Image (cartoon, rainbow, N blue to C red):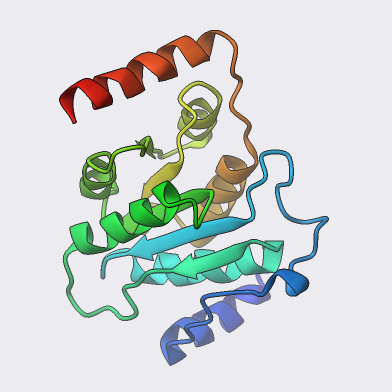
Length: 186
């Protein structure tokens, strides 16, 4: 993302731009992660993550992803569980391949998302945790602390997360055990 795009992003955030969807014919096939068939991404935030969500939403649309914004749509105080559940539901329903939830620290949203059967949410904060969450844990929801990262770092982390493939192999055994715990205790 160039420095020249930040004024436009800020204007859109301030004006409350709510473009939440891109039709399939508008999605450039060479920019979307086709390796894992990730095209549709659910994104949500509470008031603490609102600005970061707006920046990431525009960035993802620019990359060619189809973005489903579940809110919030302002900086007015809201409860993160309401939006974390919406993101998780978009993923487990199959409406979206992946989900991203942003709040002040990412911790609470991660806890909430992981209460939804079928979700493997990961709170990530750097490149190493991003890669590990996908390669080893096959995370399908990413939670972030929006205010903890500058916009360009958030964009870099999200792009890396969406493009990192699950390694499979020995990790399948662990994923299956993880999901068995959920089935037994769900």
